[in-house]
Length: 351
Image (cartoon, rainbow, N blue to C red; front, side, top):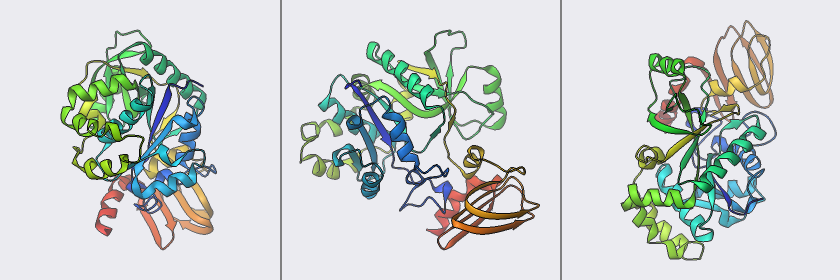
């Protein structure tokens, strides 16, 4: 394996739309959401380690998930877990991890990948990442893997590229915010829009130069600790200074400002597993389109539901269509799938 290849796994999210399974104490990336025998984090690590040396894979997460990461990924050392003492979105943690990698290997190229996505064709994924690495080793490029849209989704951001560009790797014209339904349909019909899946590839040189240029205040904040990275003084510096960083995404901080952004249309199947409905899409279904995880069921006049329980609990359903039914510890959720985006609001109310 190429010792210049690195990965950053983003594993700090809470996944509140998957409540009550995903909680602040135990978020969805640490669960086996599809009943495969592996958690989403474990699947992500396994997929990336097909191309990247295990010792070069960093996991970015909140301090309180440190033990969970080390328990689920016994192949990594404690120093490979990059801990955020405060929630500051994706730009600060990517800069921090990139500077740590730069100090270790200034020739590194890296992928930044979410920990909670589902990718079925892992060989196609590895081929796409390899093609992107090859490009970023030769060019000053900030790259993303764009997902081929399959329907007019209003919950994703979109990436627009020049429809006359016949190259396999295309120059990004602009990033588009989450659209309304009619706009999303227009994007699909035009043929030069991709979903923004939040998977990025670049050289450590290109991304740190971009931060220096577009985010000088944040860059100076983390550069001040450069001498401390990879040694004992790193933790005290980060604990004192991390929360001073602006709360901003990598998209807003860098990608929407830079002119050297490129996209490779991905050739693998992808699901961001953002909601119970998206999980329902990936699970096996019965003849009435019901998906069942870890439950024993007796279903009458029931269709299009997702049913999840613990310990093969018996769940009897009659007369429900298109519902989320989840039994977890002392909580039972019975909720219309059409209102799944509102589960996040319920979690806020319960707090």
